Length: 146
Image (cartoon, rainbow, N blue to C red; front, side, top):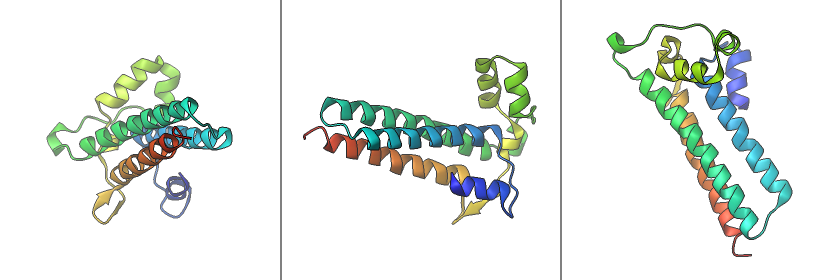
């Protein structure tokens, strides 16, 4: 999240698209699961709750990242038109209608304006969801035996 905010407000000035914002929400939610699990320090069955919850949040974030990478790799003739901004959609439409509009396509999500080692930012975010999801499951699963 720190780097995402750096790219938005720092020298790069990259505005996040709707799918980027959803990935941020998923990453923050995963961070909250980590923080609550660390503060609670569960042992036994309660640790399973954090493992499952963290795994589900990470899987959701991975799905959003994967869809974003898919949209970025669409052929030019299949890229959907740019829609209204996410703030407007959230104000003007019901939440599930907004989700449908974001996931059925948004042209601004197609643009790749940052890459590292040939991989776009959503691809890297997906890698982090896999690593952090595996970590939250592994750590809390290890606490089951105690």
